[in-house]
Length: 91
Image (cartoon, rainbow, N blue to C red):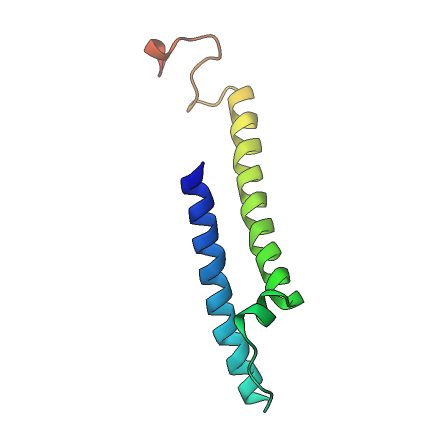
């Protein structure tokens, strides 16, 4: 559990740092002052981009799960019969 929390914190931090650099480049091109990491982390842009990424990941995971269940129930040639033991895989 702790490893996943650490991975999440590292990924969200890297996302924030990368997004901040891009945002400040845009600010500079519009002759606006740069913002701090805390200001960017509190911005709607950061949260919109984060939730957009999470949404796409959860939708792809949902599609894989539903697709796997559908293929398993439809008797896919790639799946073993539901009542077979692990030793009978492939029959």
